[in-house]
Length: 369
Image (tube, rainbow, N blue to C red; front, side, top):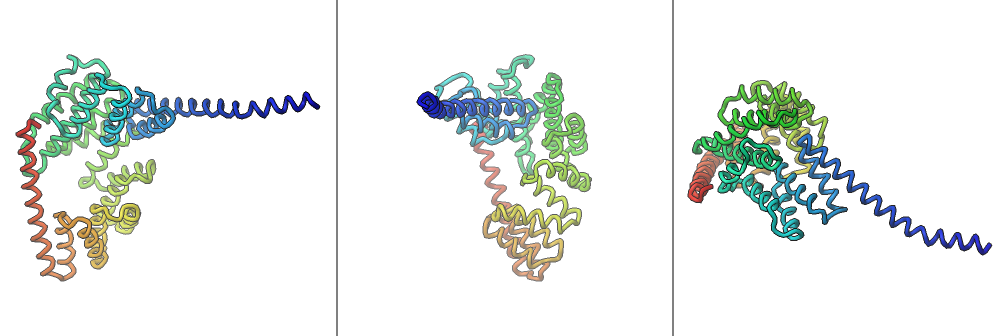
């Protein structure tokens, strides 16, 4: 009996130790699997999924500096600049200054629209580009140049020839040097965006189709193609958006885009249902409210349309598009005097917005941005 009691006691004493060991092993396993999943997502350029896996990994391994820097880089590539900045701040606190940190900070600034360092970064790329560092810089410069081109292609803006030329050169290099399917797909998407900025929509659609043929699972390629087909082929656009919605039912951008196409196709019930779902989650989103108002207008529900548009006005009293949409609604409702007021106010706000935008661009140009 005494021997049995001793064995039981030893087992009882061992159980907490085994529990601790199992916990540690579990953490290591979970961390390793999340890191592997992040790397796999990066290989297919799924930055959103990679970012989520790296966030999970850093919850169990917060001191891993390589993972922290990779998380910052991935968030930047995903367009989540706030998260990238937070990771870089933590990395700087833990590791101090480094060449890798300096480069990532510069790339983040450039992608946020601070273009003062863009020429120096471009000059630092190898001739021809070969290293992973070179291609990371190329990618950031293409994205920042595309953003500048899109901003300056707005009516009334200066032509961004240098930005377009830079992006074209880099995209052409990318397509020549990056021969894998995923990278080729990205190159065609970028080139399509450049064609769109130049108002060559046929070439843009052709590039997006090439991208989708190379990578049928590419969210980006299918989304850009769907948006490019909104007006020339709304039925096809809706079909692509339905594919994306089936893959990611909670994606707000997909749902809103689909609702917009459905309204244009006269599928007002379906569009209204999608927009109501979005407004339940985001009741103060101006674009959702305006689109819901237009959907009600198309269904000849002027009272409902006015209600949605007045909600939008309460959220954005200085938004020109809200005033103009409400003006059209009131005109259809026979409230001509009020409709005239909102139309004139909308035009006034639109002119003020354009003037401020041009002043801001003038200031940026003066500072070399």
